[in-house]
Amino acid sequence: MFSPSVTPDQPHQSVNSNMAAIQHPESRVLIIMTGGTICMKESPQGLVPATGFMDEAMRPRPSFNDGSICEPLPVNISDKSTEYRPSLRTPISKYSRHVRYALYEFPVLLDSSSISSAGWSQIASCIQSNYALYDGFVILHGTDSLAYTASALSFMISALGKPVILTGSQASIFALQSDAVDNLLGALIIAGTFLIPEVCLFFHRTLYRGNRTTKISATAFDAFGSPNCEALARVTGIGIDVNWSLIRRATALERFNVQFALDTAHVACLRIFPGITPALLDSVLKVPGLHGLILETFGAGNAPSGPDGAFIDVIKAAIGRGIVIVSVSQCRSGTVSPLYEPATILGNAGVVFGHDLTTEAALTKLFFLLALPGVSYAEIVRQMSIPLRGEMTALPSRNQFAHLPLLDLGASLSSDQVRFTELGYAIAAGQLDKIKSMLDTESHMLLLARDYAENTALHLAAVSGEVEVVRELLRRGASVHERNAAGNTPLGLADKAGRMQNAALLKEAGAMLHVEEKERGMRPLLSPTAGERRWSSYETSLTFEQAASQFWAGSAARSPLEMGKKGGGLIPDS
Image 1 (cartoon, helix red, strand yellow):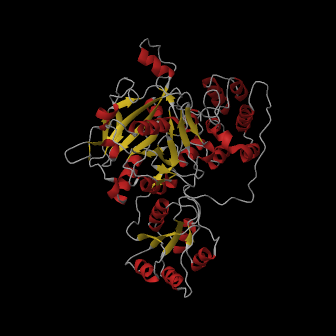
Image 2 (cartoon, one colour):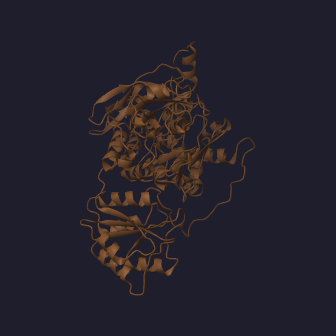
Image 3 (cartoon, one colour):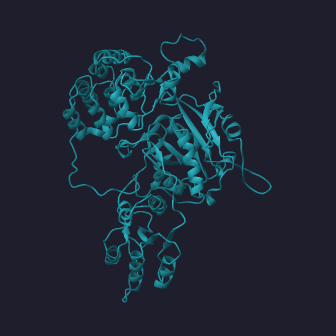
């Protein structure tokens, strides 16, 4: 995900700031200010949103500004124009990295209690316009609808390969006692340090999957919870603990995309309560143009039935008219299931079990599905029942087995290092069956592992001649956006090695040259094959032997095994 700010072959500098730049990589993050308490100031009318957030709130604080040169960074505006905004850089983190960031303020700051699909589209458009320019995104937002926005963005954005982290605060950053600095700094460091390709919410030292969150307190600093899904990461006194086993990765060959259409005008939400009448439910279900209803039911999905069955008859009639009805639990934790007779009756009537969806996720998911072009009622019902973006817990497969940990196979290497080295040899030899077998048992570890030069398995495969190896790694969730110690993406290495098929497949999966690779001179050229276009800084393709030689030389080692002995196979800090 990162690259050194200065390449190794540049002349030695005596200036301290330049020395730091040589020694420590730098990532780029775009902060998008939408509004919220975090940026508010006192006024005679009470707290009001204030502009100039970077200059007034971040520049004076050493934790946000190491005093380095404020080089301008490009920010693409929604009207397709590009503006260069001043940037600041954090001091070196525990992970030996700087985060350089720019801030874009919405021309009109949004009130989170009044946000609509137009506001969500504005945020998504800003991410889309700047996706190729930054390693991650931090969205500053009011807390009232923060969980709704996080859920909506998670469905609107598909094939996400970079972190998008929403945060805000319960008190203004200008207040004497505030949670704003910790929330913003934590989100910024995580977005610039760990490649977590999800829409997340960061609050009170905890990173959550955005579509699993709900606001649980109006005043406490720990204002958000994720009752049915563990936290993705936590900030502790010694670092950031990332729960890598929970991180979702794209496994389809798709490019980053945004669906802006959401059907927010034809969905309602109704909370079941003791004494609710069939007539009241019927009046809601007969609202003109209604297409969907989120029904907040008791416990595990129970609702009144009554001896005459009138309540269920109203529901059956609405479903017969094509209205999608989804049952979610009123309880903070737990799942909707046919555990009791009332829930079974609802299911038999055609109500969709929302399992452990939050109300926020259920609503925004239904907004999203109802707006998909040409999707049938049956398909909407099916997709509401399965996880699309990790928003609900998938039912366990009967074919899932646990595997015993591998024994230490080397005196000087951990078993993880040995296995990653073994995978490197299999990739170099094009042994697809062996690669599949290794990934079947240790996919999580092997896709996260890095060698001495911070190359991932996909970096190694990018310079091989076997496009099917690249395809298999992508299918397993390998990230196309990771960068090695020299700042190269897998696409950049495939390009340098002249592996045009590999490069084409990587681009199909959403790969793009990092902005720093482009600054170093990568450019689009026509390939020797007529009509085929490739990115290249070379005029001719290399043989596999030349590519491998150049690759290992650039990695400061002659082979995967040597790289392992020098400390390869390292799992990212967590």
